[in-house]
Image (cartoon, rainbow, N blue to C red; front, side, top):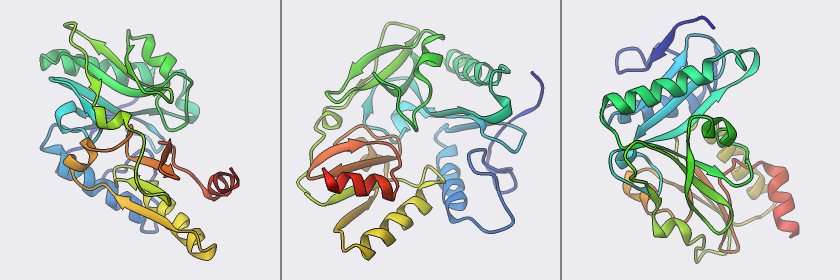
Length: 249
C-alpha cells in the first residue's frame, strides 16, 4: 500500500476533488452542493479523508451529536461512508481509513464509533462484514432489518431515536427525503422529478437541510429515505425502474 491521504479543510476544499465523484471539466451541481455541505460542517468536527487519487477511496465521519442522522448517543463518532473501489480494493486502504477513524476517536477520548447497517447487506451502506472485523457489533435494530453498529470503548452504546423506528408518515404519495450530503443526490432527484412529471405521479421531494430535521426523521436516514403509501421503503438512492416496480405493487 502506498499513497498520500488528504483531509479536506476550509483552505483546500475548493481545489480538492471529492472522491465519490471525480471532478470533470463540466460543472456538476451535486459536487458543488456536497462541497458546500461539507464546508459548513467542518467547524463541527466533520472529517472527510481521502487517498490522493482520482477514485473513491475515502472515509467520512462526524461527532454523533452533529451528525445528520436520527441516532442518539453521547461522545461518539458516526461514519457516514467508507468507500474503496476499483483497483484500490484489497490493498489495505479500507483498513487504513478505518484505523485512522478509530485512532482519532481514541485520541479525542470518544466513547466509540457507530454506523448504519442492515441485517442483510444493502447498497449504499458500508460493508457490514468489514466493520465487524474491527469489533463493531449490532446495538440496535428496526423492524425492517436496519441495524446500528457500534464499536464501544467504554461500554456505552448509542441507539436509534424513537422517531426513527416509526417508519410511517401521513402522506400517501411517493415521498423522498434527502440532504445534499451526497453528490449523487441532486441528479437523482432531478431525474425522479422529471419522470414523475411525465407520468403524472404525485411526488413529495423533501429536502432535509437542518440538523434538527435530520434528527427528527421518521425512519433511519443517512442522507436519503423513500416512503410510499405512508410506509418507509429504503435508504437507497432509487432510480426510475425502482419507481415503476413500486407502483406495480
